[in-house]
Length: 442
Ligand SMILES: CSC[C@H]1O[C@@H](n2cnc3c(O)ncnc32)[C@H](O)[C@@H]1O
Ligand SMILES: [Zn+2]
Image (cartoon, rainbow, N blue to C red; front, top):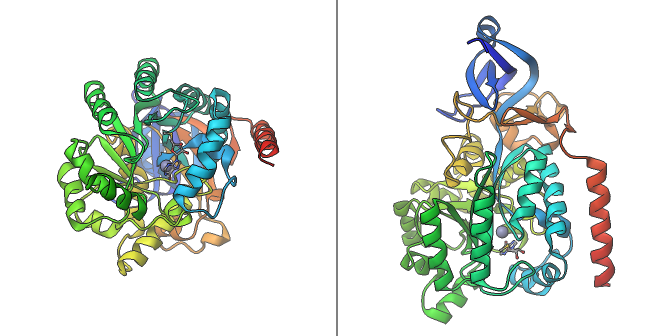
């Protein structure tokens, strides 16, 4: 291939590369060779300097890095709407865990993850960080969809359809790591469920293994005030203090939810480089509490954004999640400037990439990074006129304005058509699962 030959050139009305800074570029082009971005330059120059097999002109569009959904339970799409309007522990103990005990299997997870992948592609997500049972099924569904995933293998003290207890989960996790970690679009990690479901021994083992294998850890932490109160009553420690004592507060940990934080705890997170994954809509829907986003970011903590599963959100819409996060941060801090639109987009892209330890590969549109890109049509009347394209994306756009998505240079969505998954088949299969699940619970 000659030096000026590329595979794909995307000319866009606006490009928000996110890094090296938040500047929005007008009439620029992203040049892709294979799976990699090789250039980002004014369109007029790209026309002179580059040739490509495919050239797209996105004259109505804002081009952004693929959104990184930093916390999902993708297969739970098949439980969407199963149990609504309940607080976390009632939701989990009385509805979700019994349903998982009855229905979760390799085929359930494969089908649920494909359904979630299709929803995420159509909403501009290119990478998702998943914590769920049967990681092999998550891996197969992800590879088929063309998405990128970080798969966090579950760890709990009690048996589930996937494993008999901690030893079993850790063995299954290391097997999955061996099997899948060399796939370029997959990464693996450990997913100890929460401080209230994993005791010290397995947590220490997971940390040791994560260090040996150089993997990230994802855990629900400080989701509700009840979780903290119960921990204090049981062992005298707040959950974050316990994790600190066990050595888990490191840049390896993605602590999901993180409500009810004390100033001292925010300081620990900042000092240790622990990442926070903020899931505002799940926290609102389960009435779990508020994460102090403004304070966290002021302290220098890296914050990523996630939807959580579709059974507690109830969608996998990162554009909607950005808006919720922005509005909630302003409401909680009583500061209108708490989380400006450009910072939210950074959180939903590069923030997620950092939390996954993958910010040298994904999260921004820079030469040398993977070609994970999303085109959003801003010419619709709902997003007119455009003074600030990123503010328009965060405060006014909806996910159905995502027209095209590429992961590693490959198109997964073209003019809103899914290219890797069959929409009609996914809907049919979801309805079949719903009939089975609803049939038995009547
Ligand atoms: C270890 S597999 C994941 C496990 O987590 C459950 N889950 C889903 N959403 C939440 C949440 O917001 N807090 C705590 N646990 C959650 C899911 O149902 C699986 O059992
Ligand atoms: Zn979760």
